[in-house]
Image 1 (cartoon, rainbow, N blue to C red):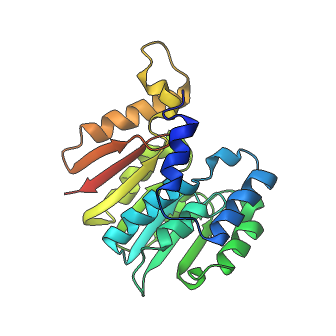
Image 2: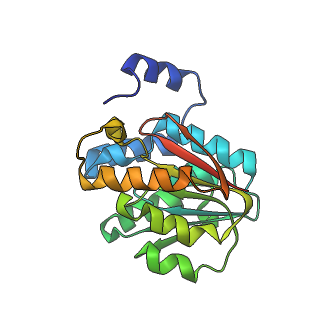
Image 3: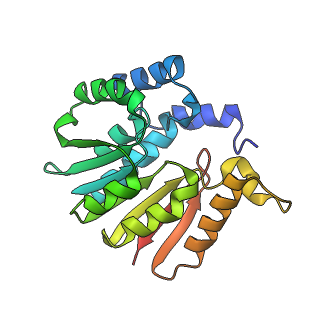
Length: 212
């Protein structure tokens, strides 16, 4: 189910800031060379992530799910001058491509790129985060949320992608496992009194969660 018409998507793209040449290149290369290119955040969602990051001006960001690095660079736009973004991905096949993209960006020295299992890596990061973005394997959303929560400062944000799952979360019939994982996670956040939360109907749904 498409949340927005192509015409409205184009309108939104036209009325926000343009992508940098590097982001356009990453998007193009992802669609030409990588399986499941629809996973890339893309222009409009990238500008939303950039704006949220700039509003916080974070010192420390954690991203779970690097993919080809598009969202990483959008989030990095809001970093403080001494800020660092830690980004974690399990796909070693993309390492060379992603590293090359990062090296071409003005934020290369502020990016810590980790390859491996995020469930194992997150506990090793001795940091307090201002912002976290979860966009990885959906079955572990709740696990990542729990691992990150105590490392997030009060007032910090956790943003979770794909929480509308192409509208499948509205179905009242038996759903596939991934839809059930996402629905369960959404209910968990909705009933968590430690946070303020709202879902933005951007692309496939962004859950914006603020720690009280």
